[in-house]
Image 1 (spheres, rainbow, N blue to C red):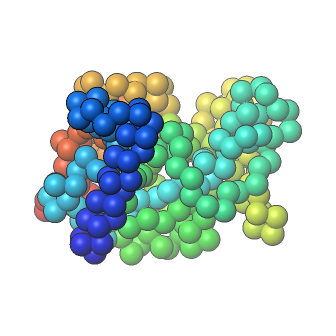
Image 2 (tube, rainbow, N blue to C red):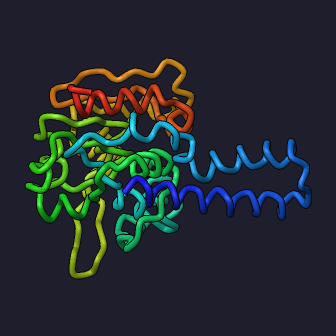
Length: 254
């Protein structure tokens, strides 16, 4: 498994080097090196931790939940557009068929954690089979902002969850599997103006979401795990310390 990851990353690094040379029209070592490092980290943040793979690799029975419903909600003409007032009927949206990591789901964290060997499931897996989480010692959430009632109950009843992004469980949706769509049921100011959170969750920390610098990041304890006090989308790509802490929280024996 490690050898396959090494070969994959090495091939991608070579391709990026060629792209940078073609893009800049120069083979100057200094300029190309600077452009390459910036582009590599922004597009493939996991390559930052190639040499630390063994140290930071995933603990056994730890899973990351990919936010496919949040990805769908942030698509063009999605529920996010409904919230923003751009579309009055966009509270129903088709569910994306494939993973297409974007900022709003926690793309960089997903790429890094997947590279480090963490298992991956998604919202649909949990909604259809809430017991699937019983297979894992720890669960790591990305920006799972839009979730179903089944998923919410399954995650909040699991004893060891790392909530990596603020704003999780912000909106409750219902899935229509026949039409492969989801409908917003409850969220901030919907269907009533006095609603703050789709699940009336006591640990709602959406007010921390805009902190993207994570200068003083920390995980704080809640009933069934730990929550991060900032959005780590940029910080995590340069922080082996944060990745060690995630691993420690997911595996107390680390």
